[in-house]
Image (cartoon, rainbow, N blue to C red; front, side, top):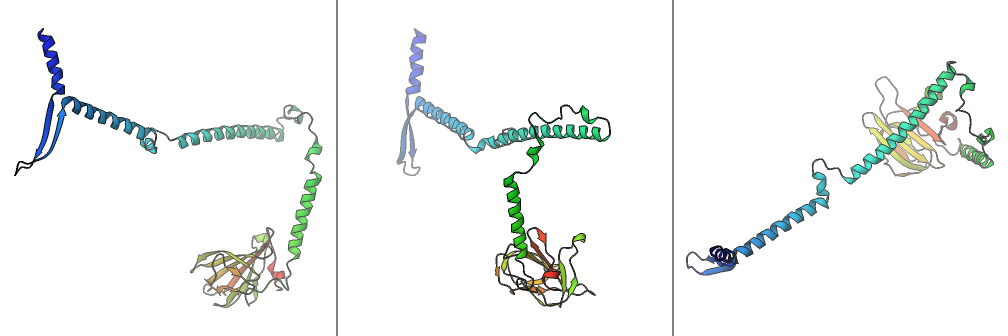
Length: 279
């Protein structure tokens, strides 16, 4: 009987009301009051703790914050690793094929294998050497490209299209065998360098001490390169008329004569300006 009477008393302690009062210290005036019980406090504190824990877990699980967890890899990194692994496997396979081909080829060249021993290297069934010959459409395309390149080169008139970029004499001609694809025109320090043809400035590269190089996309698809310019008066993107000033000729080292280096490219080929400019 005593245990049965003690149990309701303990439960009633959880439901007993308590008043929390805030008083003014000077006047003892009541400012705020709140009625609480142990059960209410436990429910509020427990619910708040559970909500905070669940919110923290969801915030980390469904936001990029999870990438800051040590040892966690993002989805992008995992996909990149899988893609790189697949590419590596394909490269290793291709490398093994090439290695086997090189070994067989070395064996044939060193007389270690006869040509008749390459049984598995024979062409597949139904293979015909005639398949290696170009088709009529491919031959027509080649002829069309050749005609367009020949027409583009024929459009360059040395007497009408190109203007002398600098008033001077020829210092060095073009020597393609030595990888010198332009000509050098001598002049005086401060002479104007003009555009040989209409076009657009592609880039201006260099330094004031070493000189500037100006690349110009001329009309007709040609590309001009003007080197050893001291002061440039144009910027990338500027449109040029034939004869517009690109800049002035730079100084030469002591004992040398100032010169302008000019190259003219068309269709992937360096044209001989010595002939085009009439030197």
